[in-house]
Image (cartoon, rainbow, N blue to C red; front, side, top):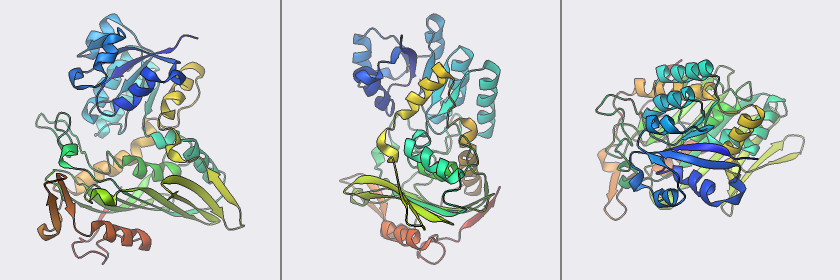
Length: 395
């Protein structure tokens, strides 16, 4: 069977995760790259290999589609480009897998869905945990009532980031919007740790391709870095179904305090945890009747989303993460941007900068957020001297 033709829109940064598979892994022979679009292609470590294989590289989508077609377009570009690029690709006959997040405005989300419906193309969003076998089975068990009513879920993650992270690419990282006016809203909750906020909403959605709707959010956001948006957040969300979701995420801790995502779900008939044993993910359910359920670890195959997309194209199988699935996460990001037009900085006496690592950190932050995590509280609820009263946001 001839491979699915793929257009790579963006070949730098995270696109490398796709290109390593598509170019070098024989298990990915069901796909064939027919072209790439990236005006900064010279920065990509994969440019020479693409050229060696005779794969054309263009600066614009218009140039590619003038002479080529592709069954699938993979968008791995800055978020402010997603809406225009996804619409153009669909209007020119390609199904689209767009990397997360979907976009940064409600208007763009509506325009992307309208283009999908008008063209009859498929449009998926690359929140990879929403394609994970373990997460999907966990969600199926929730929906089938195995755990009874879900009471609350909490997630914590520390992803240390240096100034190099914020200065990468074309300079959009950490920005609220570009000088040209495009909204970016790049933060720890919308980018690097977005998967884990979205995941809690996804797990509690009432359909396999839907997420729970937020009803009210208590929010604290902070920054140690000299950026426009926030590098640290602590959120408590109550969904319309009454489930409490707590989310703690930061970039502002030292590298040796990195903490991969941990999750606890408490429910009427048991709980589910994601933790680690010798660095390996362990996702397991523990029922009150003594049963234990093992789930495939969420990170087992971060590229499963591409195989799901192939099944959707060839067999018309459903896609678990479509634009509608991601709208509750977008609502939270937009609400945070509206509620905090200027991001509060940690008090200066708590901020440290290391010339060696080129990183801003907040002293004691990891320990404070860990205490909040253990007690299901927010920093501003008496657990941090720098904590500000949580901001209440109603949807």
